[in-house]
Length: 316
Image (cartoon, one colour):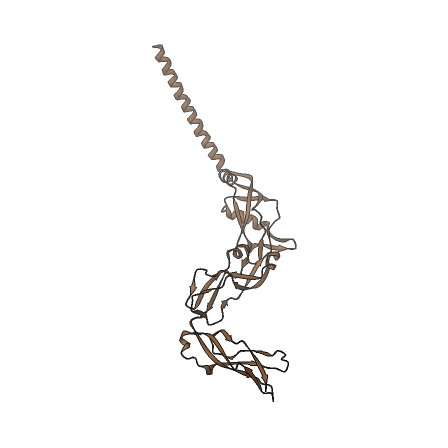
């Protein structure tokens, strides 16, 4: 009987202990909640980074900067701010400049921090008067656009106009050392495409150029006309062009064989009378040979070869 009596007493004691522990925990929770709901003041490290970078500035490769603030807010808010160090972004559109460089003012930093916390934390003290921005004024340069590689044409096709790139020049921004070393703005051309129709392509700057510089634009528009061609050969007389007065000149041979690439739709309309092939003799000529070239040739025709390319001349 005494055994059971002792056991019941122990059970009763454990229940009382549990009640005491539960009551203590509840009291502690209520007390902590009360204290954490009160307004406190504490030091908090806040990291600043930057957004809305402008074309006129470039950034030095530096990590986000930590600045110590004295702030006030509820205990819960302060605990959250200390456990999870925030990053507050300053817009480069708000940056100021003086003889020391680019910087953000003290009022701007305070406003940015309070806005970040939606005014549930208030800044009481900030020892810094300014935050120097890790940016410098850019060097800006206008450079010409170039193709990284030529476009590929399918067999039997040729260009019938000049390549037109809009814009043909771009503005680049960056550090003076990097910008000065840049000669051309190279754009990427399709390497697995053979064109059979007129070119009309949007071309982007190379990924390397886009990664290392700021650009006024990163794409250009390229156009160029294409036609299907066929090859023809003509036998044309060689004329002496702009003959010297009172000097009769003959050339040998008097005819040349020319190989031409002609648009298919134009081939049937070709006539030898549309061409003038010749050479020129001047009073300063010292060679016994004259260069043969076209004085007149229809548009869109490509000269493959002129045989012979030079002729011997004689004064009669």
